[in-house]
Image (cartoon, rainbow, N blue to C red):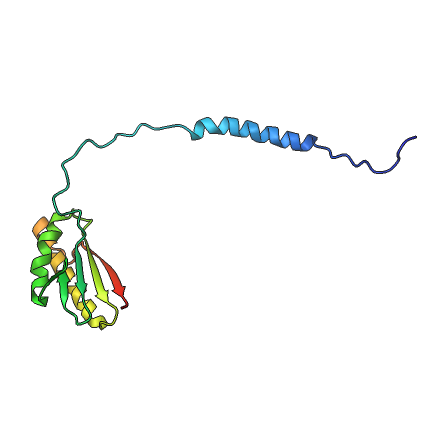
Amino acid sequence: MSHLGAKSDINITPLIDIVLVLLIVFIVLVPTLAKVSDAALPTQGPPPPPGSEVPLVLSLDAQGQPFLQQEALAWSEIQARLVPPLLLQPRGARKVFLKVAGDLPHGTAVRAMDEIRAASDQAKSRTVGVSDGGGDAKVVLSLNKS
């Protein structure tokens, strides 16, 4: 008695062929992907200057009063007080965090950014000797909604 109907067995020969080809490809590629290049590690350099680890924060409260590191300042003192800490930061990585109360007019925040830019120009001119019209300090702005 023979069955003349369709054969219901799954032919797994093509599946095995594909798996073996993929296995061979991975065996060939893994050694080339795992090559390690020799890297020259930096030698122990001088420690960073003291105070450079502390972020430089200029904040403005809801009345527009500027504070540098929690110390109240007059607007005319901002540039003179920002230049020395900016000089301690490495050139090209100078940052000032500007923290602004959310209810403050935008003009006050812009005025603070102008003061930071002017202090950055002064720090850059003291570092290089000649200012080319732009400081290198980056301003990170935070608006607090109270």
